[in-house]
Length: 86
Image 1: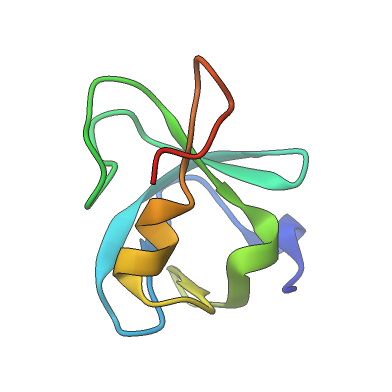
Image 2: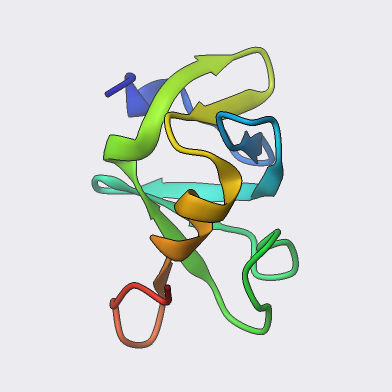
């Protein structure tokens, strides 16, 4: 897992395959909270979280995940329930 302290607000989150998944709102503990209006492949209307363990690297203004976009999106957690949506 990459160092989550390097992740900043408004960084782009992309899958290992280069697919845009969302934009960072902030890091909360071991999860990355996405901006509500940009949850990429997931449905919008509320915040989603990505487990920090999926982060492969942080470079420039991008957070690259170790999983392809479709797999990573299935592991998103919803704000209300804290459960995966996939």
